[in-house]
Length: 241
Image (tube, rainbow, N blue to C red):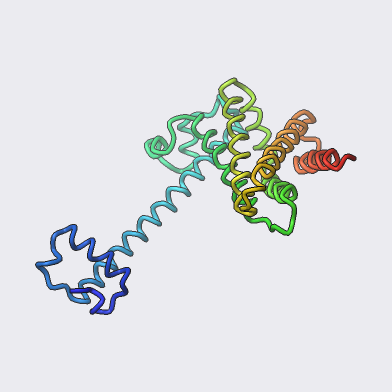
């Protein structure tokens, strides 16, 4: 018997056949349309519940990270305890340890989010621009959303030990890869891949130079100013000016 006879489309028919065969009921039971509808409804409810759980997990993760970074800025990295972070995030220590085991993991999670954000920002740009303009505008949008005090404090932490410096270097390499992959989605022609990789690399180099100059001058001007300055110098050299 085909389940399509009770008004289900072929794709649902195939899916339900597999389910029913797995539980060994297919040949022995007479399934009504209402029974099948109940099964589909239950599947939808499970998916919605899983979606809600994932959304809640992301929100909690973001709340912990934001609370931790705020405390690092206010009290210093070394002076901030895990209990203080949990309290600031409004969760129990047990819940905190479900997400993170250390302060280092929090910084790693923050760093991991930057390549993902850069990838999304590049994809949001128009291909009416050149690839270099696309990555510059993507960096500008991310930098414009930085909290200057928080960014400066985190940069100081990331420069404070060999371990953090290594993880910071890895973050920039991941940003290069994320930018390259996004550019290849915008311009999928195989012959452009090598050039697009160079664009991604130099764009992250410009960002690093901007941050270094910003830190060296102790934030005398907004980070966005140093970013634009770095890209202006890059474009000038490329044009032979």
